[in-house]
Length: 195
Image (cartoon, rainbow, N blue to C red; front, side, top):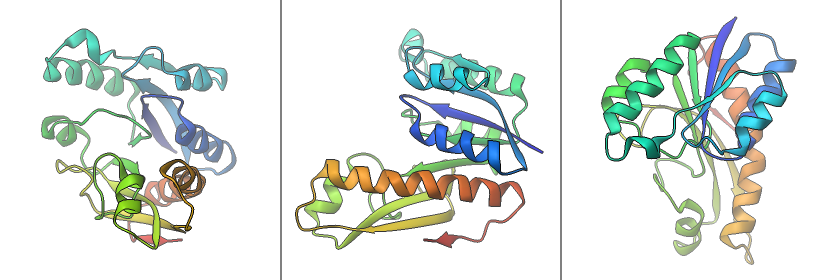
């Protein structure tokens, strides 16, 4: 049984999809949900499902990123996770943090990587006139959104799409793809899947 910790910053919709999958598919169990924002609504949602939660408020560390990450590592290490899932965690992690968990950390990103790493992915896809968009689950490495791709799901871009409508359709695919990749990763499968 793989122990899974999930990092969030907001409402945690991808976290909820991961938790639901762990309830129905054997092999993984949630051991901690942690946020960099103590007011993140996802914390209450996870706690309501009986999952341990904690927060490490990045704002209380000011510009001391290493102090914030040390506190985050302490909380995570106490939970002894085998796998870390970033699920809407809106902090860029340093190479030093990544090294601690390298090879066992996943992230979901709302674009078809390597296209559009970083923020504003839907706006960028629309501005480029792309015919499709989607999401990617990848291993986390020291380079932002550049780790090995473990899965992608695509959606067509419709003529009247806005960033919001496109985001909503991509999010549906994120909720399907991320749990699928997590459970494959937990059994050692790293060959990418494409939906």
